[in-house]
Image (cartoon, rainbow, N blue to C red):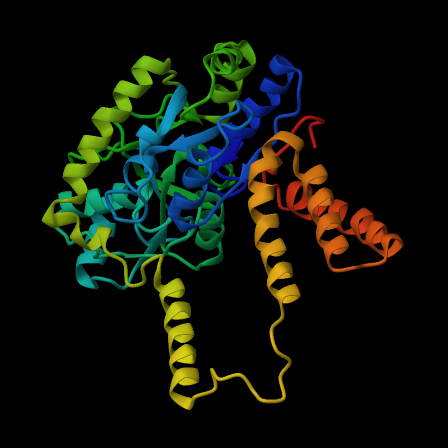
Length: 409
């Protein structure tokens, strides 16, 4: 189960609860992988492009309907087949316990007095909690960027920054901040909902304080397009049992998370409606400052490509592309070995899904070392050490989903 957000946050907690129950329903381990980065791009892209074999699912969030409108990815909800919406929560605004503001009105006045001075976080730039704060600022008659947004991947690290004094406020759901709130380390100035929270009625809504603004996020499970119906239905039945279980309902209640379970058809309909809503929001002039970023996701790749281009240009201009007289001439054997290396890449792509990573890697490595005339004892030793180490590093430690193949490894 791919979680696009950091460990300890609301999405991570919901993911791990469901994964724990799914293990009992499916009879196999269900691992939660926190694929963070890019404001949700990494996790949502990885989930959409995963092998559609029924062994990968993603805890998609509201950002799936935001990222493509901001030009960060071409992945949309249409790249997924929805399983179930599992919960939804309204946004709330939090400050430190010793903060000088006792109400939204006082905070608004402080922001208006020094635009851009105060800092906030809760998620990545342009995420649902950023949009929640920006919407309130616009409702209050202030620019959407009147508060400087610090991009952090998740509410848990954002709340750590709040308590440490790194930011002045955090926009996120109440369940994500509940432990710090009940410990007295932070206060909530309001919840962006139609009604007060049942378990904490002392927190006023934004509407009660004169701001006609509310916003929420949701979390739902989905699989990549192309999963066979038989496996999709098996997962759907298991998820359905989990989200309607007493254990899951108790988890939501004790943790303060909202309900809002939706089956596949209703979930898909909600995705379509919300996608259109966020398209209108992000294409509006008011949200222009929220859509644009100082540094885009392709900045670093562009820098690398530029440096490579300059290096190549320097070689061409200097005339160093010519082969040195002392260099050995390229022979037919060199061309053949180069072809073997390129062919091994193609061979891996053809057989890895069928044989699995370990068998495919061992076979290809053996063929290459045979071609390069490596002693068979040395080659066997290298294969027995290298292949399992690579598998351990990527599949176990880094949790990269490698092909399982016939034997499951």
